[in-house]
Image 1 (cartoon, rainbow, N blue to C red):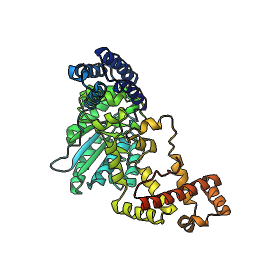
Image 2: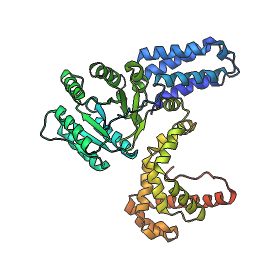
Image 3: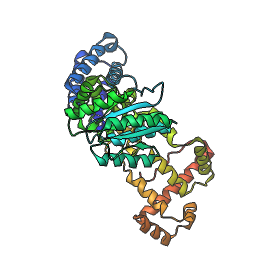
Image 4: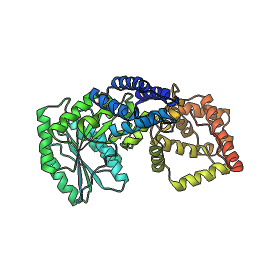
Length: 440
């Protein structure tokens, strides 16, 4: 996420941070480089102009230039202006006083609307709400079937009709059903097109007029850069949107859409999709994203992900097992599954301040974790409980069953043994040792 832009900005600002004295010309030179980096990242040129102007106006103040740490003061200003550019405050969904809260998703075909509908619904369900989804894309039977499948996976009901060609009737009926069934969140997955056309806009206006949604969200593919910004602008002008959801942020190395869309449309980014899995949806926090872009990490998001995945009682039980020497391969497999559910390793490690620099050029491969799980799954319950049983013939059988090699099995056994040994050291000395991580 933002890797190309982040690398450029980190390099530019690093030159300033180490300086004990700055002149106005130094700031001008740095801002020229920042301007080029943003334009190459496909950020709207008007947005870039305003952003650079805002930084320079604050940075050339005598209090900044004459301070003891002028370089660091400029970096703080860049962070502040970047946060403002991304929206300043987090844009939350406005919940209706009288349920259900109706959320209408709009966007072009292929932007990820249907998957996003399921992700948002799942997030509300996790918070204790009772969501329902509506398959309102009646032009594509595949879209209806996809939402039904996602509904079955998440345990969230889907209202649909394979016969109706009237999305207004389907959505209106869904509102009535949701009220009777006590559903407090209703998410409409509306039709998309390959490009903006009047027929689509007319249909969406009719749905909006009929059900009066509390939130109209435009779903945009972040990887399309300024095309996403232009489409969002068109939808806002013709329908009226309340916010934006950016999908495929995990694949967007440049960041043009994220950095432009708030300024151009005037609408906040409310969510961002960070992967294909249903749980890979994050509320958009401008300050946290700005920190990530400048290579400062995002500890708060990492903590929130960990709290969602790891139960406090389970963590205490695991600690007892590890310090007591009872940490089995099965325990290791369970923990790896939870880590994988939090997102890709690269994205998680990138949230740790300073880690992005250490990871530069390193290969962080999630498939290594999958390989470890496959090896453990190929063991018998007794083997998972005791590494002492793993002789040569058993290792060959496990390697064959997991599609790996005996060397891979040996490496895992060695790492598991080191982890247990180090945790015993931790218990004796009362300090956390650096533990080897399987597959890294």
